[in-house]
Amino acid sequence: MSMRLRVEGLSCTRGGRPVLENVSFTLEAGKALVITGPNGIGKSSLLRTLAGLVSAQSGSPVLEGGDEELTVGQQCHYFGHADAIKPALTLQENLDFWQAFYGNPTRSAYEALCEVDLGDLISMPAAYLSAGQRRRLSLSRLLVCHRPIWLLDEPTSALDAASERKLEILMANHLSEGGLIIAATHAPLGLLSPERLELGRNYREELDDEFAQEVEEDEQEGEMDITNKASVEETAL
Image (cartoon, rainbow, N blue to C red; front, side, top):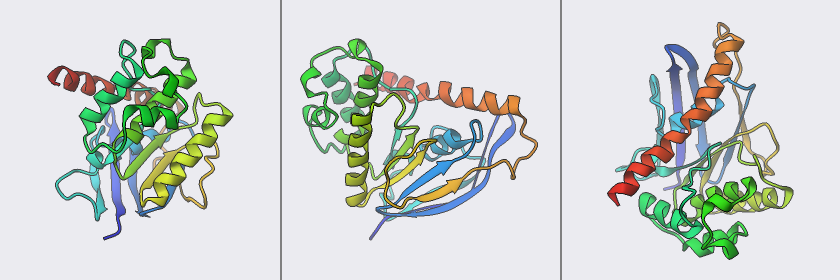
């Protein structure tokens, strides 16, 4: 059965105020959805809600054809603003941890690092990486384990032109294998005929600029949740 992600009437709040209201869309396997809109409108909140990092006030995503024993969030890779890496660990140790954390491995840490041109640095502590290299290491997390849905939040941030082209190839490969991609971005991603969802303020006109800024800051700070959660899991491992 081919996969289909169905989202109906999804809403969430931050600080008691609406960030998303009644968001609905359907995305078929092998397709990408690009989410656009002004800063603070809730693009990151939408991705984080789909990933299960933020609770929905109403509505819920359903992955038809997915693993019925897993939530939608457990079938998503989330690639946000934060790099979600441990600086004291080597590149291989970082990916070995994420592979143990996610399960369902697809390739070795070295193979994933070679995909993002970091194979020669496999034994280097992540603390010594540049911003662009840290971003590519974080991207390689998506490659060591299979999850059908990729949630990408401004994925080209800190990437140079060559790395952006590599990202385009990785996204195209994921889609060709029947995966789904949902990306929040202000920049072109090189996706072929993606579907689009524009978030606007028409459904919450009461939102003021100050609150929009608070939402944007909270979304970026909140991305450390998954790293902190992983740290707890690492201790258990």
